Amino acid sequence: MAATLVYATEGPVVEEMEGGGMRVVVPTRRNGFVVALHWLQNLMYADPFVVFGLTAGILGAVAAWPVVGMFCRKTPRAVLTLTGEGFCFESSYDHELGRTVTKEFWRWEKIEALRKNRYGPGIYLRVPGEEDRHLLTDLPGEWVRRIGEVLAIWDERRQFSAHAMLRAQSG
Image 1 (spheres, rainbow, N blue to C red):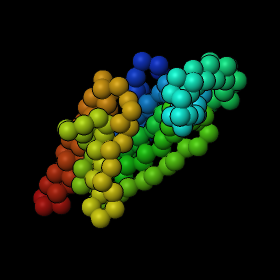
Image 2 (cartoon, rainbow, N blue to C red; image 1 turned 120 degrees about the vertical axis):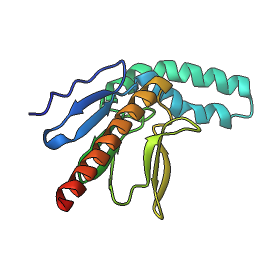
Image 3 (spheres, rainbow, N blue to C red; image 1 turned 30 degrees about the horizontal axis):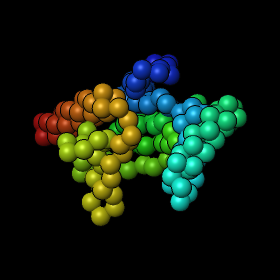
């Protein structure tokens, strides 16, 4: 039986799924102020008088904070699902209201790399001829490190399972 999903505020939550899969739920850090500030940052940079733009942007964000906060959803920032078939990535951005969730799926045969990025922030995904992306680059380093550990554990499981299947076939 699969463990119950727990939404945490202190970082990613890992769930063992039925059938041997794993799910990582990355909680949102979305709030009304962040969303309002993101929307109003264009006003600040577009204004020829930077002082006026900065003042208007900050006052606008503070005024819009409670209103925008009412419309923000607390959907997770991302859900990474690792199964025997492949990798599913669902995400919504923290600087938006959380109403748009994108869902992508890649089969393991096509994935060349899925790991913590060694040279920058986030998770590195490489699917030759299709994708070469850095996922979740906006997360705190500790969160990315924990997700990277889960991906490494999953990779070890897949390699062990493939080795066991080859041994069973040959013998």
